[in-house]
Image 1 (tube, helix red, strand yellow):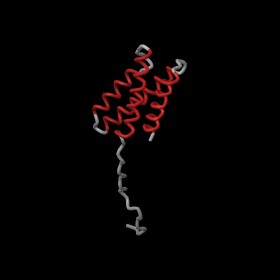
Image 2 (cartoon, rainbow, N blue to C red):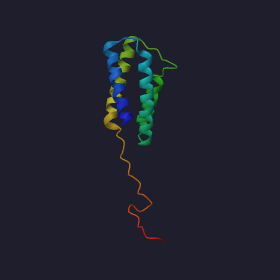
Image 3 (cartoon, rainbow, N blue to C red):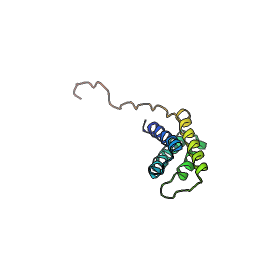
Image 4 (cartoon, helix red, strand yellow):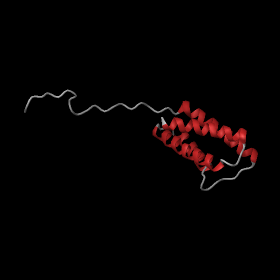
Length: 115
């Protein structure tokens, strides 16, 4: 559930960055997108979808706030648009599977008889 929320926040932030274009929030956006990309990459590897995992790992490196990669203005907008599209597509392509609950090893209604 948290991964889905982070995907939506990242996609919205990236699209907002494309249309608004302010550099005041750039570091925050890079941090959120990097963390989200790492989370999606781990989710993809757990689901054995390795191409998605590698793609989002590369996306995490591109939006790394510690070692920033600088682009020209037009290329950066295209990168943000493509990244937002990847996050939106991953909402449908990378759905987490429901986990089965473990059965208890104790009887749910134990007898009150003494041994």
